[in-house]
Image 1: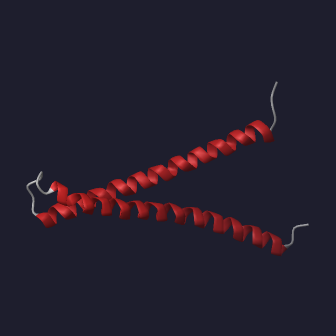
Image 2: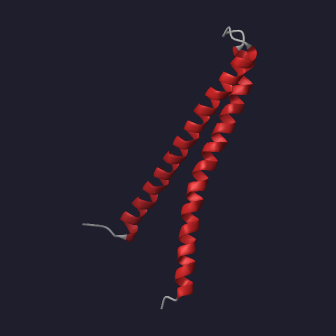
Length: 102
C-alpha cells in the first residue's frame, strides 16, 4: 500500500534527480568554458607573433574564443554521452527485459 510518506519520498527523489540532471548540464558546460578559456589564455602568447594585434586584445580574444569552443564541446560531449547511455540501456531493455521475438 502506498502511504503519503512513501509517495512524498518518491516525488522528492524524482525532483532531486531532474534538478541534479539540469545542474550537471550547467556544471559541465561551465567547466568546459573555464577549461577552454584557460587554453585560450595559454595559447595567446604563441599567437602574438602571428596576429598583429595588441597583446591584451589578443589575449582577451583568445580567451573568449577558447571559452566558446570549450563550452560548446563540453555541452555536445555531454549530450552525446547521454544519448549513448540511453541507447545502451534501451537496447538492453529491448533485448532482455522485453524478450526475444521469433
